Amino acid sequence: MAVQRCSWCEGSDAYRQYHDTEWGVPSRDDRHLFELLILEGAQAGLSWSTVLNRREGYRAAYQGFDADQVAAYGEDDVARLVADPGIIRNQAKVRSSIKNAKAFLDVAGEFGSFSTYLWKFVNDKPVQNKWTALDQVPAVTPLAATISKDLKRRGFGFVGPTIVYAYMQAAGLVNDHLVDCFRHEECARPG
Image (cartoon, rainbow, N blue to C red; front, side):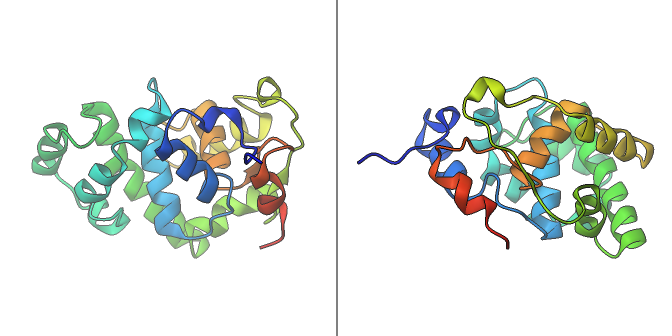
């Protein structure tokens, strides 16, 4: 019997792997949350597969998503990143990633970790949705708009409500696996 998955992931092996092992799994690891923040911002205006296919390039270009190192990047690093074919070479997104690293560290300093800050928006428990069809899954929610507004107030860029909702899905703050997907129940279990 075939494994039932959310239909959006059936385009490639990389998509299926991401869906089956990472998407929707609650993450409380600051390095992973920083990685997803950079990748989701890079996706703006592009398909997720475009970014997913460059993930290893991003890991190399951004020193394994070490926020301390990225926050220290200067103009030479901007030039290096904009010339790097392993990532999305958009200067506004590159500059925003550096700005976001600084804001990320500020938030982590204020709250003890970025994870603590982020998870407070959902009272430390993932939102468990029960969608039966892909067209029921929203692109944005009022909660995503609230988080987006707060991130922008704290100096983050490329964090509009749609990007933030995709981030929430990726980081497991919401479980948007369809109910007939084999991952829905797994991601609904208390961590």
